[in-house]
Image (tube, rainbow, N blue to C red; front, side, top):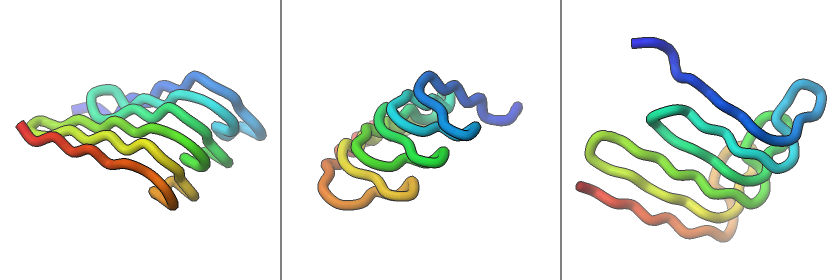
Length: 77
């Protein structure tokens, strides 16, 4: 297996993801929302998928961690 492939389309500052953008880790998860210094920060939506389950979190982030108001939906196959 190769290493994860990250794809980013969005705003940058000082060589970091910063502002609004979409970050995709092919086959694992995608995040669309605000970034700060290369981390999820502000409002955003994370969609993760695995072999037997998937989850979506829409809400606020701080330092790449869920923080404050948000909604988590988890699906198990």
